[in-house]
Image (cartoon, rainbow, N blue to C red; front, side, top):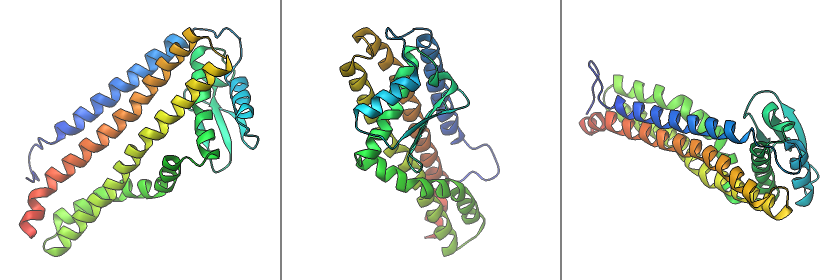
Length: 236
C-alpha cells in the first residue's frame, strides 16, 4: 500500500533499523573501551603484532601504516596497505591486538584469494552506485504513470537490492577475518588463552555492527517493497 500524503506506518521499519544499529554501536564501543584498558602480557603494540602476523603468513608486500581516528582501522587491498588507527597502532591493549589481527585477517584473505572477499570487492562500486540511485528511481516511478512507472520502481528496487547484497556478503568476510585473527593470536603465543577470550569479545562485538547493518538494509528493502507493492500492482 502507498501512503503519499499522510503518516507512513512503514517508517517504523526504519526506526527499528536505527535502534538495532545504535545498540550494536554502543556494544562495540563499551566492549572496546573495557579491553582497551587491559595490557597484553607481551607488551607488543598493534603495529608490531600486525607486522609479525603478516610475516608469519608469508606476506611481505603489505605495508602497515597509521591512520588518524578511533576504530578507523582497515585493509586497503588496492594499495596493499594495512591502516591502523591511533587507538590501535601504538597501543599494547588486548583490544588493539584483536583489531590489528582482524585487519591482518583481511590481508590474508586477499593474499589467499578468499572468494567472498573477491565478490565483495567487485560489488563495492555497484553497491555504492545502487544505494545512491535507488531512491531517486523509485520516487520518479511513484510520480509517473504507466509502464515507465513500473520500470523505474523495479529498477530502483534492483539497485537497492545490490546494496543489500553487499551488506550480506560482508558478513562471512568479517567473520572469517576474525576467526583467522583469533587462531593466529592463540597459536603464535602473542596472547594467553584468557587474553584470546577477551580479544574474541571485542571482535564479536564488532561483528554485531555488520549484522546490524545487514538487518537494517533488509528492513529498508522490505519497506520499499511494501511502499511500492500496491503501485506496481495498479500499473500491471
